[in-house]
Length: 508
Image (cartoon, rainbow, N blue to C red; front, side, top):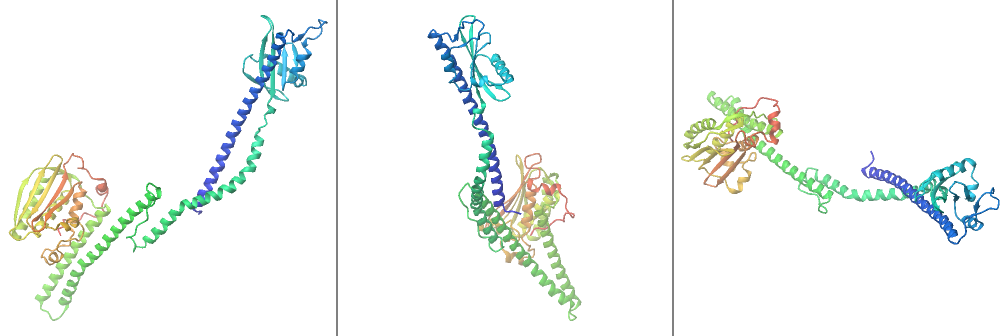
């Protein structure tokens, strides 16, 4: 396949030829029209000269028509008038009021009988005004002008002047011949010129291609393309590619971190499982020690299953293949149910669980996913609140939204860590989280954030280190703007999942 540069050159050459052809046709039409108008003006001038000659003869007392001694002889103009009229160009004819030819120039006299009759007939039919009439004869085509010179109330002269269109020197054949000679030279000069211009225009694109090839090797995503003049199309292309490369860099970085974190999370339970299984398979231990080793290995298997289940949930959410079944839901009963569960969990942790305000509000959502969202936030608050602390739940109905909030008096989150709270595998205190009895994987808040977004809502956090945290879920009320599925998650609702939705995921 030819290059874009060659195709542009070919297209430009074809367009040039087409433009040249159209220009030639327009030039031919306009030029012929101009020449015909000039010929009409010349015919008018010739007719006016004949009229002035007749009027001059009358003013000097010389009758233009010579009276003959023989009344049967033909009447004609005087010799002096005839000599003057013979100097005029083209076809000249002078008739009396009866239509009798008083004078006919040489070109009129040499016409054949049929052409003479056609000329005379057209002359008699022509209106005596300033218009010009085209007359087609067998041997010629002329432009005819007519004048009337009154002699008395009942008598006048009719004057006709005509010129051949052969006098127009500009013909289509001449134009075609000229264009056939000039066009090859124009193409010989324009095609290389177009090729060079196309090459210069594509030179920045070649540089962009080279830079992109150097960047997309997977190790240079930190580099960016140079942006040219502001407002230029190539500058916009470079800016768009830079934004695309930046998103790729972010995605690759997240993928690398995700792979490293997932590998790290799986490494410890796998090592523990291997040690437990080796101990259980040893012939030395007692049955009780073997049972303890198998029980610990089972706990690690359960832990890895929870991790894989959480990862599968997020992967399906990213691909838009995770179903969210939307239906009207009363949040107050759901919140009371979550509060009862929180009190059971808080009793073992030595915490006080309070429900300050529980307004009734109806939203369009998936009850299972919303319960998962609320429980994730509650268990997360219980996990990071020391014994003797307080966890407070509230559900407030506003004009168009409902806000579910979980406030705790726990260890809080540093301001520098707040932007990363909803990232996967992120934990403010990794060592303490992994050592904790209920240590998770750092996926609970990421899943909760996705559930809130899938319902057209938001999940926000406010926290101060050592002063506790507040997680707030904002959901649009049923029947209000935003209560339906957002465009990003429409495919989740309307699509079908390849498998049944996984069960409730515990907070991490």
